[in-house]
Length: 184
Image (tube, rainbow, N blue to C red; front, side, top):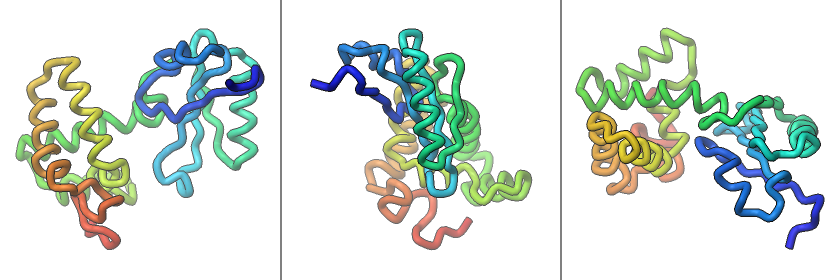
């Protein structure tokens, strides 16, 4: 139904454009255009094509990102997680691992990260913004794919303590912290 000039772009997060391009009859017109959480503070736009993405489509998405005031970040190759999530996911996973294994509590882990790096939020404040449903699903897919028992422990923890209780983060007013006034 779409006109030939239509560009299809999706905020793919941890998925790849090539996973979806064939769902259209115009795979050359499809690419990823990934915005960070809290876009009003973190105005990044990661643009990622796939092997069949037309170069003009890619350049048009870069120009579009700039035109709406975003910092355009072109990826030269498909990469699950783009740039930001490739950096972020290991941090968030490490925080969850430390918590689930009983090494430290939420406040100590977040405080360590915040003081040591100057970040305004620690891993658990970030997870609350991302949302427990997304965090749960990403960890579940990883546990199923790898059979990693430690990852499955994280999945079980998230389901029992958060997902089943409707504590989904900022959107529901409660996750690791209570909102609108979290105590990090």
